[in-house]
Each structure stands twice: as C-alpha cells, then as structure tokens.
Image: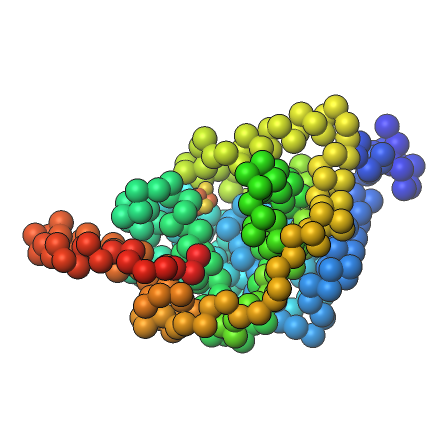
Length: 322
Ligand code: SF4
Ligand code: ZN
C-alpha cells in the first residue's frame, strides 16, 4: 500500500477519501481538512483569541494541537466534572498536555462552583448527561465572556455530528435541526460563537492524528456514556459507512448544504431575561444551571436535617433556558 500523495509506504487507509497516506502526508491532510473547514465556514480569523474546550480526550486535544500548529491564538478551558477516576484522569492528561507545550489553560472545578456532576445529576432524576450538558454550556459561555473570548471551539467530529443529525431526523426535532451547524452564532450578548473545527474529520482520523502526534489522551469513556443512544446511532452509521464509504460525510454535508436551510428560523434574541443568581441569560428567574445548583443546595440542606419542603417544591419552577 503506497501513499496516494508521495508514493512512500502508507500507514493509514481512508476509504471514504479513496486515499492512503504515510505518516507525514496524513498529518498534513488532517490539518488541511481542519483548516479548510475553518475557512469555508468562517469560524474565526487569525486575530481572534480562541477558547478551546478540552476534555482530555483524543478529539479536543487533537483540535488544540492542530489550532496551535496552524498559528491560532488559543487558550484551553477544562471543566473538572467530578466523575470519579475518569475526571481525575481527564484533568491530569489535559494539564500535562498544556504544560508540555507551554499553553495557557483555565481549569474550572465544578465542585468548587457549587456541585460536581454526580450531585447535580442526583436532583434531576434524568441521565447524568443532561445535568453535565447544562453545566458545560453555562461555564463555556461564562468563562468566554468573562475573559474576552469571542469564540469557543469544541472537539465534535464528523461521527458526533452525523449521529446527532440522525437522532434529530429520527425524532424530527425541527428546532434542533435548525440549530445544527459547525458554527453557531450567539443569540444573546452574554453568549459567544460556538464552532466545531473537526466536523469534517472522523473519530478514526482524530484518533490516528493523536496517536501519530504522540498525544497522551484519556482512552476510557466516561462511565455515564454507557448505553447512550448516541452510541447506537454511531454504530448504525458505521455499518452504513462500511457498506458504502463516504456515507457519513455526505449525510452531514448535504444536510448543511440543502437540508438545514429548510428548517431555518428567524434570527433574534430569545433570552431576554437575566438570571438573578449569576447574571447569565435566563427565561425565568434563574438560568437552568443556577436552578440545578439551588436544587442541589436544598437537597444538601434537607439531608443535613434542615428540611424545607416549601423551598424544595419550588425546585425547577418556571421555564428555563437550556
Ligand atoms: Fe458528561 Fe455524559 Fe459526557 Fe459523561 S458522557 S462527560 S456525563 S455528557
Ligand atoms: Zn444563573
């Protein structure tokens, strides 16, 4: 097997691109794919400082590595979620990555902010990912705004986006379809632009990139991801991809090109209220993150014997943003 580009011995085969690559040509190909996506979707300019959400996994660390190599000004943002050994390992790997490359990194420990994911999840009676997602969205926007970053980049790859699209289509989530994009413009002055520079590369490609670059990432999945519907969608898409290479890329790209415009909603600010606790946008009295925190606090007080039924009943009252 020879490299399609330089005819040296190939080490990576990408059926959906009808290409084989040696190490050097693959790394170049990967970086160009990311760069092309950034330019094509006008994600950010070279002058803008970028906050990169880094979990410690292969995708977010590969993304940070590529953005630095492409010459962008980046700062990492890591949320220590408090999910046992998985989180401890994720924080350790992220900090080591930043230290080895002398990159600026902001670490936010959810425990220090009021409550970690397991405690937040316990008050929702829903899967932990719901509370985790609310906390992530809150701190991503908050830190970006407080520290003057106009844009936040996440490591979502083609597999993530195609699986999300499949889920949205299967349930005809038209509002979600309208918002599914590699670039999400802020709908409020206290939100920032969200971008996904890896949306054109597969999970396999980002794993190979991380491996070839010698990036030490967390291999274990979060224990809360077990049984997630998203994984079933990924499996289904992988079977389709095996039978017909290129399916995932076409599915997503054609949706962005011709499907998404059909679901577009009129733009405008929808979050006119302000959270009385944190000052971030909210539909009701508090934003959904602060409502979660308040519930966790009440539960803690109740468990400590300081029961307050009236307050507890008010938990999750009113409409929330996320
Ligand atoms: Fe959070 Fe769920 Fe992801 Fe775990 S799997 S990090 S709980 S969103
Ligand atoms: Zn709030």
